Amino acid sequence: MQDYKDLVVIVDESWLKGKNRKTYYTTLQANMRKVIKHYYESPFEIKNEQQRFVIKGKETFTEELILRLCKTPGINSILPILKGSLDLDEVSQTIIESLKSQEDIKTFKIRSKRVDKRYPIISDQINRLVAGKILEQTDKKVDIRNPDIYIDIKIMNDYSYFSFKRYKAVGGFPIGTNGSVVTLLSGGLDSPVASYMMAKRGSKQHFVFFHAYPYVGDEVKEKILKLMTKLSLYQNGTALYIVPFGEVQNYIAKHCDENYRTLLFRKYMMDIASMIGDQLNAQAILMGDALGQVSSQTIFNMSALDRHSKKMVLRPLVGFNKIEVINLAKEIETFDISSEPHDDACALFAPKHPILKPNTKYLDSFLEEHKCEDLLEKAVEDSEIHIFNVRGDNIRRKV
Image (cartoon, rainbow, N blue to C red):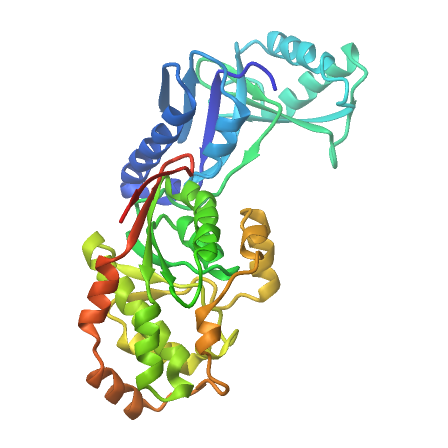
């Protein structure tokens, strides 16, 4: 990687926000600063230039930092840039010298844009002029369909810049611009992907995992902590609540119709998530449900759960096929972790014939008679809390 001391950050959806754009940009800038300070020791500055951010540093920006910034919601892409004058001969010569050192690059394509429309040479002419000089002085060839490298040139007001690589980022809105939610995290594929989907929408998340001790061991906790090292990156740091849920499950299993166990487990999980959400001023709870995927995720069961939920329920995967979830899990590097086997107490208590369409009268009656407030409050009080930083490190555990 070259000696890049300047980065151009292309903003995603925030630029569409009109009069509210400033709020989104301010939040994104603060989120970027938080990340950079954890990876970069030298002084730096971030400026808004023509609806894109330019990060200027004293030392070279590492690829590790760039890749970490790409996990910051609100960013569309990042270009490490080399700055030059407005003289295209000088720009061309600098590009040529760089290309000569890259022997693996055989083909290229120029993409230019005039941010300053007063510049007298239009983009197509810039492309032809620079490409012509590269062809004259190197053995590189033009390939407009599938080049080895794209060379992006931008003409600004007082200078030009060019880049040989564009890093694709998360996109969406900056974290903190669309409320706060409590994410119910399991050891499966779906809930981590659901978390990622809502991170892109700018929702700050706090995570809850229901640990069914003594019916399962601590191995599953280690799996959840590994998942959090990935998911916390999209949150710029967050907290995980590991809630002891075994006693609640045992109580439900003893008192309800067996076929309603799984549905009621989920209902009381949602109650606990709502209680934690009240403490954290969260507006909603987030779940990884996909319509019809398992018995508790029929439209009738989801409707019943929503009717009894104390907070808004978000299900970003509700219309996803399993292969779509798998592909996203691979993209965000949670697939291998989620695929690790673990004990599941819900399976231990699972009925032979789980209810698909609950009887409203029975459900309402059971919930009225079994509020379990003391049991749920104790579960919240006994929660184990893990704090994750911007790097995804588990920096603190509170019991």
